[in-house]
Length: 325
Image 1 (cartoon, one colour):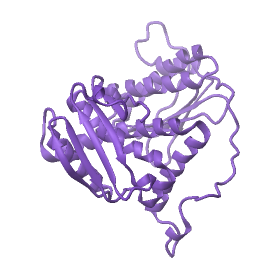
Image 2: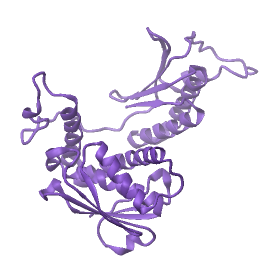
Image 3: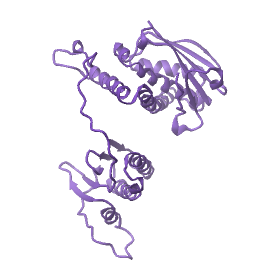
Image 4: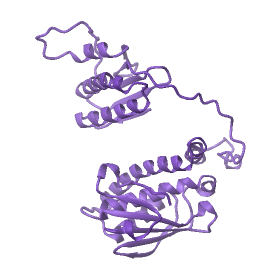
């Protein structure tokens, strides 16, 4: 896994440290081991942010028994001194501390500019299944007819990547796991799309239902969807769609509709407190067009027993709390 910390601030480093700690605890054989690893991560990120003078890239590789954290930056190189610091020494304790907490610590000057610091964290992964899966034979993607004279271009490749990942999750962990993962992606993507819309339209404060509908159409049009507004009222938005951004391949992975639900529901809930997204008709399951109803405002969740439900109370969660539709 890879992250970019930009701008390289203490706040960004702290948020990434917390995210890495959650990931390590989720997969560690002994979650109590994560405390020392979290301290090591914090020191490495803090050093990079303080001295890099620019962007910081972080990678975590856990293909071995212990995770290997690598922090890349473009700051000046230095010689790593891991000797024990004096008690009276105010600074310079960070790398020594990491060397005591990690299984291994290494510094490499990059050929172009900058450096990378690599630490093997003292956390053991719990036993997991070995994946040696056979190739999909039924409707594999990308479809051969999508290739051009020089092979597959970027669009069919990326579309196939998303669809096949969704299908793989559904095959391995069930359809709800696939929908949950896509919903999580949609919550983040939707937040970014809302921010872009606000910037483009110079909007501050709560989006009106009309502005939310306009935002939906704008963001879907930008990714080659063909959404249009059917009706808008103070508590309901109804949209149609004549073309799925994923093309006909969405029929192979209907869980991808959860992306639309999560993006729409997150935006509506962040602005009106609650939202329910009803996928009334879907190209993904053979309907000629999509029809999506978004209920919004206080009490939206009480107005229907079905649909995907979203709460806007926690902006960091993007209001995503799906119930099975």
